[in-house]
Length: 429
Image (cartoon, rainbow, N blue to C red; front, top):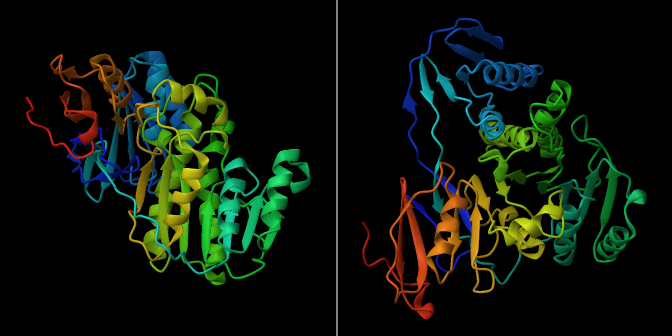
């Protein structure tokens, strides 16, 4: 069951337990990536990790399956790639596909996680002691917004970015100068997918916010471009963590995207990059138990970031967007090792208000504070990836304030506006 309303909390979700389904798959004894095609379908086999050449292999398998009308199976032992299949189904709606994960001698068909509401820890009166923070993508809109917040708390900052500081727009140069006036700031121009410079001071925290957004249909995307996009964020995360552990690294927040869970058209390469980032973060947790690694998968940030131009339109359409001031406050909380935190979390911004009554993270969940049945139907369309669910209407005297999704049915109930935060459902069917 997924809750579409989280009373009096931020719009955040964590994946709950969802057991995989056993699935029969022919045993393969080779360890390399390969494609097998016959009249019954196309099978793409990958390994335990994403490797050079896998993007071209999977993209080729998708195109062949779409062109020939054959079912496509992706089988792997942890490499990933399911997000690209889901993105492909947006372009080719009739594409039949499945993802199977091999575990020892057994194979399992993956299931989407069942998302659960999560209440973020409230801010405490005393913040964490100032400590060195590295921010990859530190000269981007999100990086500069986060730097300003952390500078106010006295943290020394190391901003890493591929672009030179001198090439920033005037407004961003002023923001950077204001940050430098408040704390120690070191800016290094570096491609962290390849190497990380020596840390200028001990680094306790890392925010990995670097990334690349290149929107293109999979039908037109060159294999070389997908190869470049796919592994960049994950490679950079590992390079940064391995370089900074000797400098005292203890806490990491890796910025992912909800597109990795439920990609939209044109977002295939971006979705895959963020899926691989999430998988690499999970490996680092196992390898580096002394370092806390949180994967924060965001919806669009408004006003800053690579998707800022689309955020206004998305927000008006009912999608959850992240105000920068909210996003940087939450990131600061995620970095604080004194607070218990999930390993993976999806974040969509503050709860709805009467002025902005609908906020939904596509394919995951959302919240609604509405006064009519049509708005609930709209929320359902936004939240459910499999199409519109059945809907039980509320009586004409009710004010609709809550909704729940269970399987393919939406339950709604009403109450007065004043008690919408605490009222429990009176009936469901």
